[in-house]
Image (cartoon, rainbow, N blue to C red; front, side):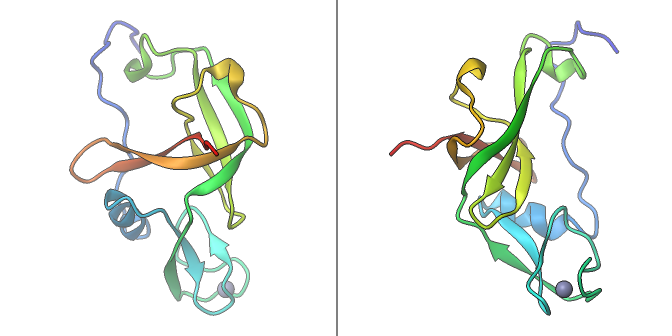
Length: 141
Ligand SMILES: [Zn+2]
């Protein structure tokens, strides 16, 4: 892998049968999580079967977009050419108000000010016609 490709494209998820609906909502800037229609257990990432009751039925539950930093890491190593010139960058695990944890990045916040438990809210990064990524920024009062 070469670090001399500053214009490399951001890696994006592949739309698959179980994840297409998720990304379709995100494209419209609607943060949703798959929820079992039978026992109401959230499941993330989207997958065909409920781990609790084995139902194949599900709905897309709209999230508030608010949560807290559950934990985070600062990445110093260049793991993909897209991040050339962007290291160190953060990766955060956000626990949504609804209790689901999702991996993202925290924006509009210097890495040294990130704290576990800090309130955050979703913002959107439109990567392509098909893909919008849910990013998070510190929530202001
Ligand atoms: Zn279930």
